[in-house]
Image (cartoon, rainbow, N blue to C red; front, side):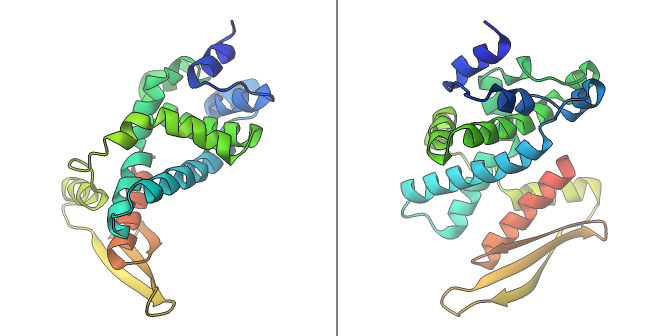
Length: 221
């Protein structure tokens, strides 16, 4: 059994186009040395596919949750820490193609990004329903036990900013658009002139959470 076949058995999906999963498992450091495609474009798509699947699921399951609560749940479920845990559960690190030095130094970050690429590969090889089936199976325990006590993007960003910048993040409301009954807020969070992020939401709180989460992702990249 090849490594790819072993991984397909673990995740419960058999690829028709195996070149997709091969690309999904290939980090840019490995592709440069071996002149093959890497997973960066798939990672971009997988991030969006995962976000859609998770947000749809929590929207359906948590009918009493406010928009702000849903935003926090979604942020927790798709954050790099959760991605890393899911990736470790399926032993994804054993299948990633990257340089040994990066494996030794940055494996947690690499497997989180690779998992997004794998999700995109499943989506492209099949459809959104099949991708959703696999994601919801892999995320089952996290969806059943959403623990936000230690996860709050705004608190995490504040903690990082105080430690590294010695000051608090600044949140600015850039605009409010749309009808009064359904406005859209655009918020910017700023740590300094080179460290900031913009996000939209249906409330100021939602936009601030999304902006903080986006900036945390940038910081951790």
